[in-house]
Image (cartoon, rainbow, N blue to C red):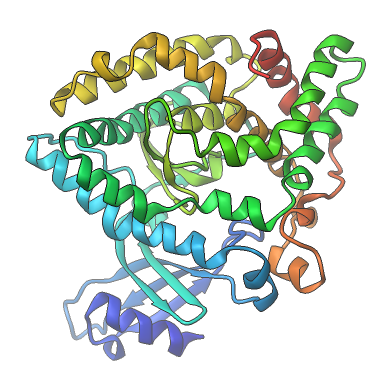
Amino acid sequence: MASEIKSVLKDILTINIDDYSLEGLESPEKGDGYMSDILFITLTPPRSKQSKKYELVWKCGKKSKVLRATTPVRQTFMTEIFFYDKIIPTFTQFQLEKGIRDAFNSVPKCYGTFIAEEMEVIVLKNLKRSGYNLWDKKKPLTKKHIELILEEYAKLHSVSVAMSEQDPEKFAELREGLGETLKEFTKANDMNALFGTNIIELYDLLKGDLDERTLETWKGLYDQTYFILDGMVDKKEGLKVVVHGDSWCNNFMFKYNDDETSPVNVVMFDWQISTVSSPIFDLSYLIFAGISNEDVECINDLLNRYYEQLKFYSSRLGTSLDKLYTKEQFLGEWKKYSKYGIIFACLVHKICVTEKDEVIDVANAADGGKDFSNAFCYDVKNKTAFKNRSRHVVKYVVENQLV
């Protein structure tokens, strides 16, 4: 393993890797990477040389042949590699040409990527060494955390808004390069098992907590999962931007000044299902997967805040949002497309309350005969935590006619 890593890093970093000692090789917690294996690596130069020390994250595709045959592991990595190799440089250059100093750059530094037969590697900067930390997934995000992420999403989405108007050919190239990884998942897996099971489980758990009419409306979401993940993602009308697509708390790292109540910076990673679609996909996923019971009534304020920020950042890039995407259109798309975030939130809430000894390894599950979707059909131990994490979301989306 170490020799393989050194060989790839030699090409990516363009240094004499033999002069460096390879240390660390520690893995994150089990379950932190479903399609990938992750290692934290330290490259230390000899004392005799005043060379740079590298703190790296090594991210490579799962090697299980069964998993690769049944799940689009390759496609997920090709999407993320394209994002780092093409999307970010192109977006950065576009913003610089407009004189934007605080451009969207809320992604880890990518040192390079590597592709070979049944091997995909992305090498990133280890942000933990720069003071960034993951949020405790057992707790909902605070409003301040959500607001910070939404502003960065507004920056990201505004580049698509401006580029699609000012350089449509370039934007079309980027769109084609990103592809539609989520649709490949939909073809390869049982989406009702992956998402529908949680909808029904919450329906059963919330009996006695919510009224019957609310629960029956909620239950009707079960029959819509394929349409949401296939037809809705492939929408033809409305605003289309590069979206993250996977907005749960474990895909963000935060930096703080004094305490963990007021984050000052956020970095986003895991762009494996990034695509071009409605900004509502990012907003609904982030909000419904992360919002607390105390903040759920602030959702309209969060939406209004995001829209005004999208409008501001688009105007800085020379595009008037009013002509392309009115507030009424935005709120209409929220009503229409937020089901995407709702069904993902059910899965995320379950994962967030799962104990360490319950966490599945999808590669082992695949080798044992389970497909990707059925690997998540486990009976979570802490049903009370699952219910409490989701109750206010179920109530809100039904009352606001989002399902």
